[in-house]
Length: 523
Image (cartoon, rainbow, N blue to C red; front, side):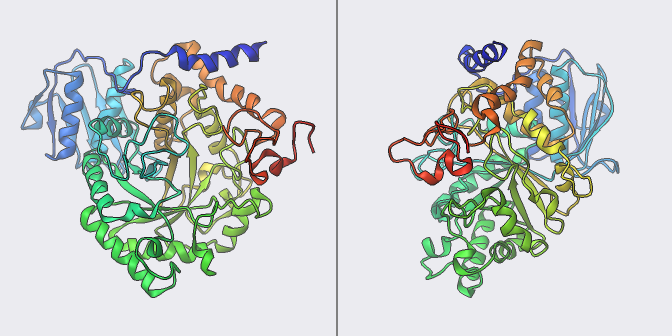
């Protein structure tokens, strides 16, 4: 009975939140203090900070010298406790000082101060905060035609009819990300269309990058490995072919001439029918390193996905391990292997990927899913921070390190999440789904926060927080009963549907492929 009542709440709550909000969690209350603002630099990020402070203090004035200001922001601090994007805050009822080593750190410090003000915590002493992961990135699965794979909030915010569409409210997207420390975005689907590297689309990507730059957000692209042949007209896309190497080198030169701070490439290769280096008898390392060398002169990186599912490939839980472990230590230093939290496919509950902890000589990063592909779409409330904490904190039994710890002691660190943002006014399909976007950013900055701490930051009612903290378990019980994963149907990906009688359904994509459970029995 308790489970039924909770499930009704989960399914009805999105319908009860009728008032749509387009400002996400950025609805500020007015501050009572009148501030005179001083910033040590004058740049586009200064303009953003001033705009944010004006929202809470309309009478804000700008001082030319720090001694004439009671709100001081320093972006060239020599404080050794502060990392490049970190900050320190000292604040009282009448004065605020935020120190950072960069404009980005100053921006994050201001957002932290504003968040605390909304929670009535204006008095802050020697609060130091540094990001745990260097690259904190959203993966948008948006297609050039404007559709969104596994998107439940409308059409793409980036593409419209094979062209880049720069939305009027892109600043809201940028503000939301910066407010929780997200500093990067991949704007297109991992099932990448080669045309995203076409010059006309790249010109649009430049417009997006220009709009996001003041918020310290870099743009990345997911690329199709066969682009040299599909887009460039070459006879092959073999990563060791000199003409292919030249094509990618020239393409990187073209991109960086337009976007000097372009982040790099995300690649899904030799998975679910997509092309990759193995088509030419090469390895994942051959493919990743070829791209890494083309990007390296500009500081770009390659995020090479370890999701290498092939329905005919045997034990799916072992496929990534079998393909990547022999390559441990063979990837260049600007390559990072992006690994889904579990070895199957974003299930409501599954063990962590065995690559975490096992790959000791290769840079690795987690890939989480913010969009609720197997967790109820935008029809169910499912707060995902509890799931992510379970994953991050679990011991790998490799030197007693947690999953989180296996992703940190390396030159390059990164933390990715598959976004669920679209053209709906509330961005995420229903208002409570915004909490997962928010929670992802907070955990990317500080994975030691608890799911409860994050849920309580926005001062939700205790009953709402309680529902959020129990929601993932309720959804798991409903969608993966008896601990059997992939009981979701071929068509909707979340309703319990163990049978296989859907017209047109592929046998090797149905639940019985994974664990032999059918409508008649198990095993």
